[in-house]
Length: 270
Image (cartoon, rainbow, N blue to C red; front, side, top):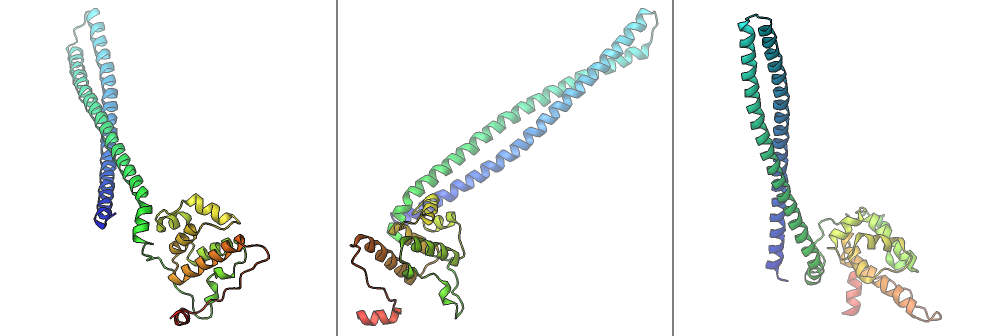
């Protein structure tokens, strides 16, 4: 996969994330407008009921006065006024109902757009995850801006030494200690740094087991825990030593490994 292809994937992912954010923002705004429209509709409905009750009461009073033979112009005028207010409230209710229905349709459309954006983003993320093994194979381990600082002089032994492990269980225990020494990143963070070379559940099970993890997991784990090239070399040497030890007859043992300074080892092989 070319560098151009990688950049295109990253650009598309950023674009989809921006679309999802915009869709969620629009949905929130539309939901707020829809809630206000529903509230205005409820208020208009209550007002209409009040106007209707006042209109009916005024008409009833005017009818009773007419039956008794009384001419009360003010009662009739009040009944007409309440009738006009009732008609006005009915019109306002119709407008509020139409606005509420429109806001509901707009909200449903915003929901669909947000769901579509979320699905597109999820599909792109799944596609990129499928490309991660290829990216790792082509580009090697990622750059590590999260490297742990070195210990002060006199405390150099704090960093776990994998070459001290005599069993697979001790090797795994040293991996746990190395994670703590590397500022104890979470399992998910380690997986992210390792570009999904393994899953969080796989790492969790490996660090709970007493069996030797795979070389691929160990290598990615050390890189993700800010390991240097020297650290990686030591861990892989320890892994090979233990792995080969289990393949040899019980009567045959390997000579202990003595670590040499980097400069001295290059002089011996030069």
